Image (cartoon, rainbow, N blue to C red):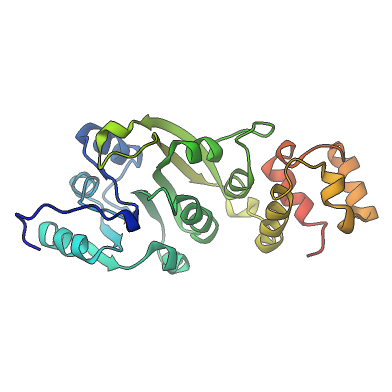
Length: 262
């Protein structure tokens, strides 16, 4: 494809390209990049954020792009970047743990954003910070408080690994093609490793089990797993067995997963 041929966004890849330069700059500034940083940008697309990241002068700049046409164009335009062609859903996030530290950022496709964030925060132990733009509804879930209707499994999981902060909303008008919903930018700061779940597999199973039946009371959902130890946990945590999943804090999910057998 020649440079003069306009690129047509691919629906199958969830491509919506950010056009507003001020918003691009604001997203990159949120990462507070310095000369010692190693940066990974997910889904750079046409390079909306890429050029501003390069201007910040990180020590190493990697990009992960699934679309081979866009990957080729980006390398032509920015030969200094370290290109990794492939699907972010299949990327080995543990490979980043060989680094001292890294910052991860990107405008994530709506259809895979939640899954990517679920994996990244729980697998990348060297992540210093992450900045992601996601569907506004997902941003609200990521930053929700217990008891809120938007509080769910994604909230409970992610907040066991990182603090989340809603930064700002991004309207559909600044994208081409224009999406039908608002977007928002969220910042992630990892918790100290000592606070991470001891048994993440058990935590994931508990979260999925509870939120699949979020309208039911906890005692009803946990009926088959109810033991004296579980009963004691509820007493010590001063949580009513009649409470529902969204009433538990992320930390309570973690502690409850330690007393249940899966």
